[in-house]
Image (tube, rainbow, N blue to C red; front, side, top):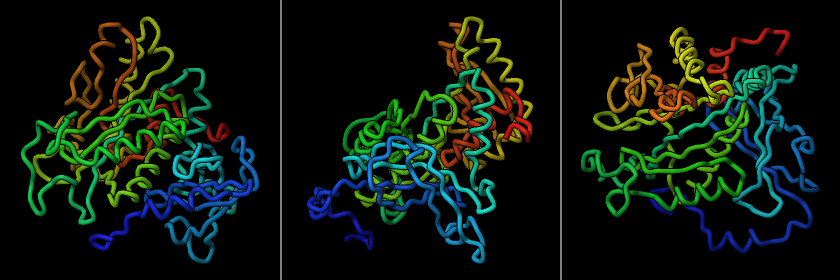
Length: 362
């Protein structure tokens, strides 16, 4: 126990984790609450589930998660994705869920439902996504790891993709998270230290359709869960420290079948025009507090104006130089904040590029 923060006693815990489960399985049900945060609870199953169809629907007290009133508090959680559990190992599983109200409609916090319908309606475009999740690791006092207490480190410069004491902090958490994601079957494609000390990034994807949102949410849950064991807090705030420090984003890479084929650049340019026309709508769902990050400085564009360019990290959307050279590929939407909901982000991008689906299609 340090600074009133409990850190898991892994030596004592280990002997209990080795105990036989007598053929039963622990399933960790994970869902998104009414504040864009994560919740979870554990269910004992009589056998290993082979798919989400083997998992029962469950429920929770929505009045405690800002998802329902106290006089009608039951909210149902329906399994939508299943992953091996890197914490408990064995046949135990992690279960990503959607939230549903008793009347059979999606809960107000269930942004996955509409996003999944959009992905399904546009499956012929084979839309791939890759998300770059930036985050900041904080100590028990809420100050970034590696920063002097009540003070500031040396200016930014040596920390990005850095190595060595004084430049990199909490690599053990990052390594643990990377391996845990791999074990769980998350398509984690890389990690790196970011520009601000104590800040990191990992990338998930490419994944097709709704799978990206499911995997990113589970990867976030794993990061929080692993942070518990090290006594670290994980912040997804887009501007965790005011001043001359980089913010944190959720850069979103997008590629359709048409964009990846010869002549794909014309489809990318067509997407730019559509994104420009709905810039305000996108910013509404690209994360809370994003205005503090998107100032036009620190490798961001202005929140008030849409722009795009080749290899320009100061634009709203960046076209990689290699894609421009090849005349095909993908684009990177740099506007989303680190705390943005991946279902909402990928959903509105598909809607903007290919149109909304009618109520009858939902």
